[in-house]
Length: 337
Ligand code: ZN
Figure 1 (cartoon, rainbow, N blue to C red):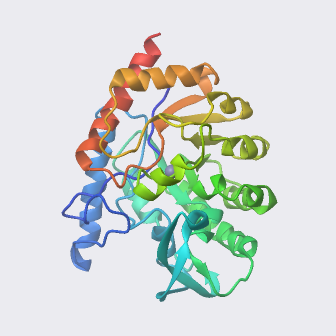
Figure 2 (figure 1 turned 120 degrees about the vertical axis):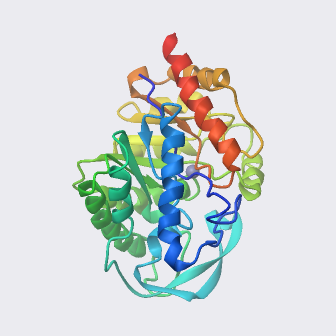
Figure 3 (figure 1 turned 135 degrees about the horizontal axis):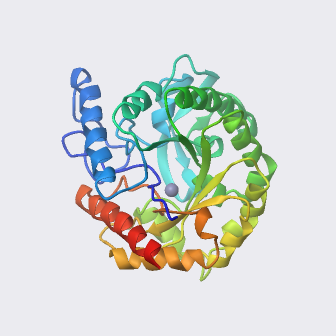
């Protein structure tokens, strides 16, 4: 009861990349970079195992960003042609690479790194991938013309990657779709279909992660504009419950998401955000336990996994470490009752 996991990303150590920053450049040269990423991933693996986190991952130490890490080696993307783009419906502007030709995945992207992680732990191993809709909202298109078409092409490549990750020992494969909370109509029109294509035929446990974003200023501002209750999940959860995805990771702790919206996913296991990802706030184990118990009023305990609200990449390493401990101990407390 009440297994624990994180959404995925954890801070990079300052010797690997500039801390507390998204898209931070690597600080090691090419010859040392891979060994450095492995060292950082191993450190975070032990930091997850120590407080008893049940389903572990690499903390995304191998990738520069949760979306662009998957894109770096694909064919068809011009990384020198940076297009300014209003990401997540103009919540913030980023200079993103541009698709200029048919997309092709010539080689595996994260598979060798997953195999390395598999060799280092006996715990359930989770690997995260960006979802097709979120990729299309973090990348400019000068080739496909329709987002739905480009998303489907990404879904095919993600599916190939996911099957190879599964063969390399990933027990759980999570697709990150924060864009699902922004483009609600498109989720119904083609977002779910693209997600299901990305998951097609997998035997590994599948998750979709849908949140209100990293704890960065642009997201905090956006959240404050959403009113007293956040009802985005109300539109999309019924579609997700009818889909083939097995588990849903959602934001809950400290949010304005009405808890009863979790009842819209009666057929799924829920990864409930019991830990916030804002900088500067470290919750106690008791607070985490209270969040888990509050969620358990709306979700059967055996369908509830305690998680973080989102990735912790932009936080300080010390704070993220504290949150891992609070999560592990908070789940122990919640199980006692
Ligand atoms: Zn998230």
